[in-house]
Length: 234
Image 1 (cartoon, helix red, strand yellow):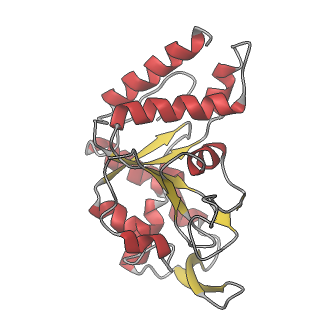
Image 2 (tube, one colour; image 1 turned 90 degrees about the horizontal axis):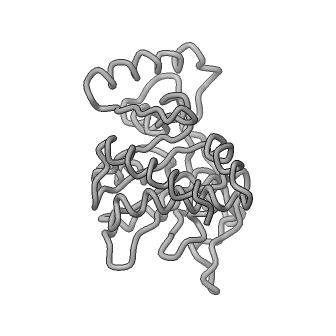
């Protein structure tokens, strides 16, 4: 391994710890690996998989027995998170880290055809308190994985993104509050199984622009902690 990789690993571990991540924490990851790709291109043997592996190891070695989750976009619905041969279903429009996490041992994927989530745990580590959420019909709300993640005290880690505009938890809160600009769209698969997806009535750029103010308030309250690596922000 190039000397640059251990240095990046140590840097990530250090900043994760400074952000308040501890052994046993359950976390949900929002990430853009482009800044990490840029750093790894300085090595002679760079491969995209190296960024995913490095990030996974840094997170896993920090939280250890904790559960790690991420969005895993859409997939071909087969009624089971894993098929008869133990393989996860194919994905479309899925991020590199999400794809990487899906293929790790002890990963399981929820069954929503539009808004699935992948959870990874260590053998002998923590388990989700609610197994029912793996077959959720709603993308957000009380019957979704987001509600169970709150019950399991998940922390959210945002890596390589400029702010909280990608904070999907906000859509869960919108669903709980019953905001007037979002409705539940009915989705049916080929077997006429019903699912629901929260959709804005129109372009809500004005409303979502207020997330900048929300981020400032959360930072002032110590709920959000930011760390800059010069080449990435989390």
